[in-house]
Length: 430
Image 1 (tube, rainbow, N blue to C red):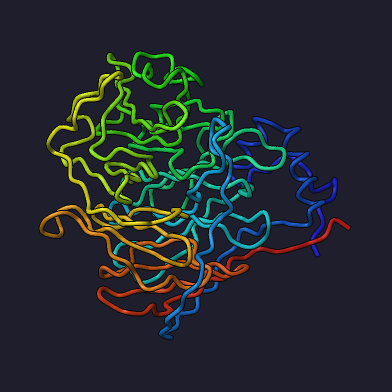
Image 2 (image 1 turned 45 degrees about the vertical axis):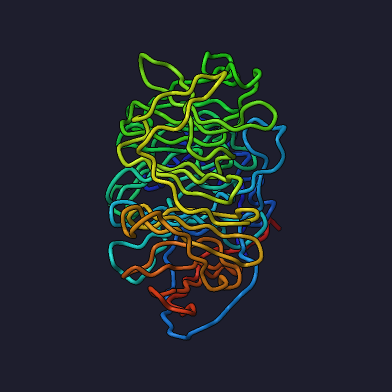
């Protein structure tokens, strides 16, 4: 049993995490309320290592994938979000995974796999409660920036950045508001950062999060010339950088039922862009978009950069220019529960009923990139991710244990590769 007493509710010492020191400087009263609420709930986290157990059992498993409960998307009024914040990111030879574990509400954790290693490591930034969720963006080789969504009494979003694969973290920010509950609510391009807030505001930073400014407040895009065709209603649901850190993309809804992709660049302001496949933007990542079209789910790439095509005229969008690469559609995908990126620009989706699929990377096949339906995902799968040697890993969560299942290239069944026990200690306020 662990109790939080009044003597423990103290200012951080020099030995405490830099995150706690940052939080203390910003909002002392909130931290006191937060710690008391945590003690009452009887849940305290320990910053400790993980126990790893390697195994080699082969399984043919199938059940509904486990993922975090969807939350109301930023802007409100449009129903629950479809895609979980749980995701994976392949960048610079490294793979990152963000998944929820343990209790209700869950703790959110970051796992990393470096290069062609067959092992995953728990690398969650220490010192901040993350029940509200984590939103991450890769900024280069071994680099990841994480925004912590506020929970309980916290009202701002702390940041943490690693440049060594999660071995160490440095605090940044914070963002003085809640980052939206979307896997595409945060973007990074070196020192350039962008955040989508819960109220629909888009904020940017050019100094790695030391300072932030509002690029678009709620209603700004709708009121711009680019939003004229949306009847005064634009709700941003995802953001991503373009080919430079000064150019930003924003995907979202247009009017009551349409969707749109907007681009911002200095000197030009917001421009509305056309896509070769009309339909809702499911995910928007660096260099790729997943769009639900009439024929199914399609992945879109722009080999020469997002900004190599002309903006659409709001009243009559022109045909999409040449140069797009469009995957073959994944027919009748149903709801996309979670999705993320794989090595070389490939992508994955988890679908209802335990179904899972990947789309081949751009330039790795002749003709259009194709979707591949995988064997049924192992029980409690939260995310898929790139594995070593072209394999696909399924990260399944049950209680405080994360099990890594591996599907080797061209294999017909998943093999258990690793188990990680996440250290979460339950206590009582007494």
